Length: 412
Image 1 (tube, helix red, strand yellow):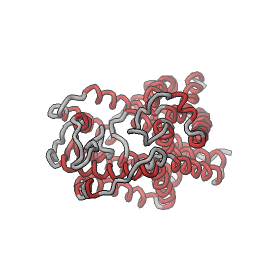
Image 2 (cartoon, helix red, strand yellow):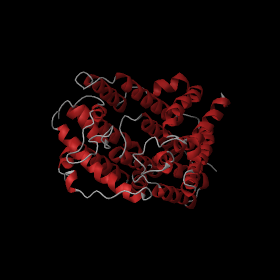
Image 3 (cartoon, one colour):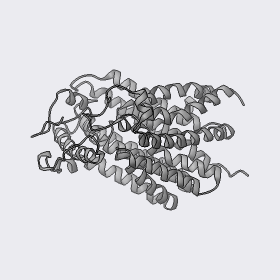
Image 4 (cartoon, helix red, strand yellow):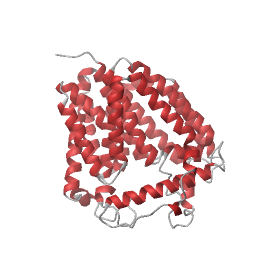
């Protein structure tokens, strides 16, 4: 095989992805950059041209990026450098997924072992962190918590929680790879069950919710492919259009009970976080009404955060860096025009799933990965977090590999 160094290097990097996410989620960005080096060696420039050839999805993404750049003209401040970083991260993720999909089957099957091993190791590492009160994470991050507010979270959220975020959208592709190698249902079922348990024990509600809903999508898509994809994209499109209206009907934060928070009970922090999040969504919906067509400009949520505005009647920051809802973030920053472009992307993505309608396992992997990746976007993270975009990049790599493996003729 040509360039064995590239395959060995790529294998080790994919194995390390889970550990990198669990020790410092921001490490996924440089890891994605490094991954591109052996991928260039394996795929060459021909794969690069094939991956970015004009298609409805590529064209739609380019139009959305262009609109985001234009919206800087009337935003509160310009974010061209941030937009460049975001575009580069997305492009690297697309290139990596496309190159892995184009690998010869022999090389790709070699990668499968390392992807599975790395994912199993990630689950084991999360259990170790939960049982040891994040002993290893504390060694790497001995200083103050870099994300938590006050004393509500330990390192098990601040650091190891990034591993759960990567685990949720990748576990179904990994489970499919395990099934294809073992030709048995029990190993992948055990793996997904352990992934769900590890996610559920983490103080990050989006991760187990993503695994649960992704599992439902996996089963539904395996048996009812066309109906399941239709339901997924219809639901996403409906929420895309109705998000501001539904959010503005949420009761003001002053009418919501805010529990007392202890330093030990993650459930109490989760309750407070949910209550505050609903209030933030209502506040964002009200700001959307001020610029419903063109939006307030790319990354305006961060500009709102810098104003130190608070929710009415509270000391809670009105928009803490981002709205914790990707759809509302598009409405707020890019307006109805941005929503129209995203709607076109959804339509193009739905059309792209047609090739999966006669491939049950491949369809199940795509549907479950799509649903599991959508949950954190809708309830937790900013669309523009480069570490989150890198997480999606690795999820796309695993999913495209599983789809190709599921579509390949069975070997004996």
